[in-house]
Amino acid sequence: MSPPLLTLTGTGKTFANGVEALASIDLTVRQGEFVALLGASGCGKSTLLRIVAGLTEPTSGSAKWSRPLETKSGRLGFVFQDPTLMPWASVADNVYLPLRLAGMNRAQAEPRIAEVLAAVDLTEFAAAFPRELSGGMRMRVSIARALVTQPDILLLDEPFAALDEPTRFRLNEDLRKLWRARGLTVIFVTHSVFESVFLAQRVIVMKRRPGRIASEIAIPLPDERDAALRTSADFGAACRAVSDTLAKATEAEAA
Image (cartoon, rainbow, N blue to C red):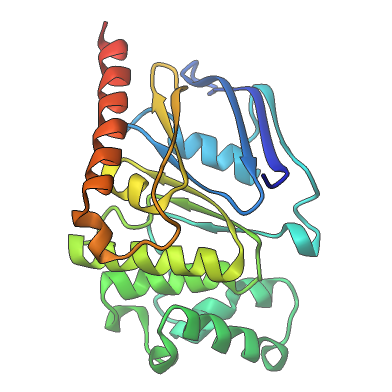
């Protein structure tokens, strides 16, 4: 097994208004792993991801990386639910943004921009503007922007939730390919059982009031996953197992 990369110990978050979003989260994520955080709206998945990213501090417990995130081998990319693109800028300029903010000039950045646009199949749209793109293409731009800093950790907060099902399926497959090709460590937030099972090696099922981990489920599917897998008996069985666990967690909340 690969070494631990992230360790959450007793992690909790209570907001200033008194709302307790998370409580007693214990979780380890290993280098190169693909982990999905699954749960209903309001269970604290996004709050947990923001703590992991360092965008907000826990009010109890800790979230510790095994190496500093600012080092070359510990860069982190974050993809939000909304692509948050600059509407006045081209695709290439949107992707360039984090490098520009880091002080890299355009000439130095061009090879990286070209490389990540090719990785998300957007090379021919480099000069296009966000208004000229479909929702799925805008999300590809957002993923390219996260990859251009050459992170080895990628955090995604329900990035495909607003997309139609065929587009979502294609992007799921593309994300798996990027994960395998680049050796990324991925933490992916979703409320879709099917998406979590298709994408992840391990699914963390969460319950709310406050958000806690109900169960961790290893997904016994091959690393090579494609459209055909979605109709297989093994995929159906894994989805049923995760769905049953999520239902029990939800019933426990209501009890």
